[in-house]
Amino acid sequence: MAGKRSIFEEVGETSNTPKHPGKSGVAGGMIDQGHRGARGAIRVWLIVLFLLVVAMIVVGGLTRLTGSGLSITEWRPVTGAIPPMDLAAWTAEFDKYRQTPQYELANTGMTLDQFKTIYWWEWAHRQLGRLVGLIWAIGFLGFLITKSIPPRWSKRLLLIGALGGLQGAIGWWMVSSGLSGSMIRVASYRLAVHLGLAFIILGFIGWYVFLLSRSESALMTARRGREAKLFSMSTGLMHFAFLQILLGALVAGIDAGRAFPTWPLMGDSFFPADAFYATDMQGNVLPVWHAFFENPGLVQFMHRMAGYLLFIFGVVVWLRGRKSAHRDTRFAFNMVMLMLVAQAGLGIMAVLTSAHLHVAITHQIGAVILWVLILRARYLSQYPVAGSIRKGTA
Image 1 (cartoon, rainbow, N blue to C red):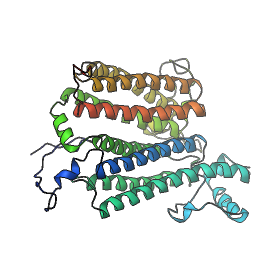
Image 2: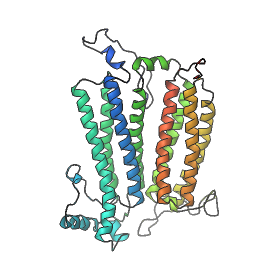
Image 3: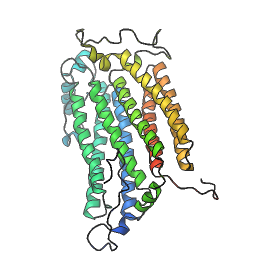
Image 4: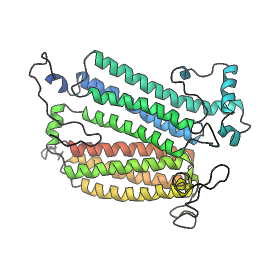
């Protein structure tokens, strides 16, 4: 029996495939259609979902950076798709927002026009979420009704929809943390869960898109040449990058990126002063463990140190990837290394500019690009593309 598979690794097991697709069981011809038929159509559908999820991550980042995330105080998955249409409706929404701690403690005196600006950011973010759900549902049901889904793919595609639904609930769980008490922003750890799940969804979609780029038989043939050690190392790099993404969310959640606009030191020292000190909005001292989520200096320090370690490990993985026998695999790891350098540079720029809006959002986009490049390098370690010495593709 095959061992337990790692995340994003779900292809390669053998099955008893009948010779004639008209009989019950797996239709052998369907899954080997490559870019034609359902396999190609599903891949296009997933690419559309992939781009929409990327857009959601970017708009979500802008929503956070502009302080817009708490402007809509209710979770109305269906009726919330319709924005305020007249002055009375806008006034009603504004009145709800004026009852939140963010307005009372940070935005007192905000005008209706200013409120509209932050409202539209949050509305756009939620609207993108609805669009993702709608496109997933239409596509999945369409392929299901027409029996166009290849064998063993129904659960994979259903998983994406289930994670999307969970993401919507977590989004509201995140927003609700900033609507009561003395919070003027969402809880940073809830933001980290929300962003982390977005990258998990993006990872699954990206992995499935890679798998659908070749026929099942081609994948099974390619797997015979898998580079197990390189696959294992790239899996570790993927998990390490995910941890760094979560730490980045903690930084964004408390605006820790603006705390120490110096590099390589944090102020005048390597380790920030009062790193294990945290208070609530009333000035009450909190237990030490709160500092790991709410002390700007400590949170930024953790993000910096993890970034250094990720870069070092990335170099180690890249050096191993350079030794691959396959040209496409070597190129994939070169791209990972190139993006890792660029992302480190963007991180330093974000620090030095006190998380300037354009630099910070570019840094977040860089995280998306790096995440996908790591996934692709990992995929090619598992399913290498055989080259030819004669054609110069080895």
